[in-house]
Amino acid sequence: MSLEKFIFTNNQVISFSSFWEAPSNIALIKYWGKKGNQIPSNPSISFLLSKCFTRTKITFSPINSKKDNWFTFKLDGNIKPDFNKKIEIFLERILPYVPSLKKHNLIIDSSNSFPHSSGIASSASSMAAMALCITDWEKQINPKMTEERFKIKASFLARLGSGSASRSIYGPIASWGKTSHIEKSSDKYAIPFTQKVHKIFHDFCNTIILIDDNKKEISSTEGHRLMNDHPFAQKRFDQANQNFFDIKNSFETGDIEKFIEIVESEALTLHGLMMTSSPSYKLFKPETIEIIELIKNYRMSSKSTVCFTLDAGPNIHLLYPKDSKRDILDFIEKELIKIYPNLKFIHDQVGNGPKKI
Image (cartoon, rainbow, N blue to C red; front, side, top):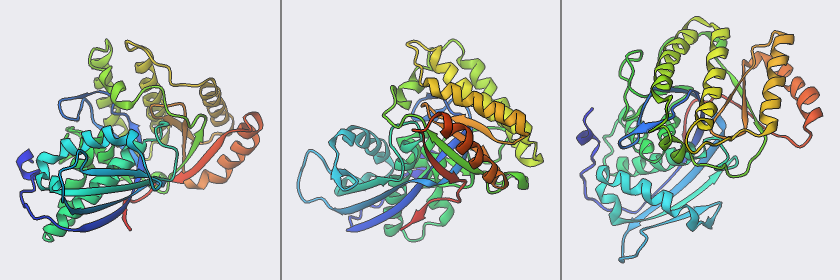
């Protein structure tokens, strides 16, 4: 689909309010490295979450004065100018595709159900929620917009704020990035994973172990930039493409052992790339490594099918089938909390998609 087809040319100015809840997602095949205008260097695939989400309300009104800022951003009801630069970059990137948006004043009011900027993909959920509100505004002017077109446009806009946000439009599994392994895949927007998924992957759970919920040392944007001159970049992109193919097959066949191998390798590769970049970053905490070893030991001794993954931060995502939930909670209680009593947890599961409120 050409970029011209994403441009909304109607110049109508309206008063309108839109309120959406967009979940975060956890990448199984990681996207790390990009080119051009938010184009991924490799395809990625993710589980959408359900309890980790951003709720955003945008109130659109005709602009009535020439102000320096044509938007106001609030977090939890409080004006937060620290986020203005990030919001401004996003809005400027999407304006070529919704040019009449700047004829409006925007009041953007957001809240998260989980800590932001700590490596749990808050940018994905927040940018997806804003993109959904803005696409809803477009649909209000153009009511003939189909549901499929609505989601593609929302994913396209979300990508311009945060690449991973493109995947937060679809659940339970979404892929983003052009690949020969998925029909109709695109670098410009994510698509739902419509291939066969074995029943063992239905109703997967995700318990997030919050080792450190403070703001992470480096933003994902800076991390992606470090891949431009990384000595292992091309090897990584080749690896990601192969892992994408292999995990697609695991979904189809139910090969959970291969799924575990790929997911954990992807997580450790991501952090390995950060530690071998220039400058290098270590986003692990000592507890991260210790808990990973406990998870591996538990899996070996119990024959469990639990596995771990991480985003660009120290917090661990435990992934496991729903029928293992009682055993995993028992492991958490008897082994993790016993050693690390100050740990916090978010017990989540794979979700089906955003909601209009």
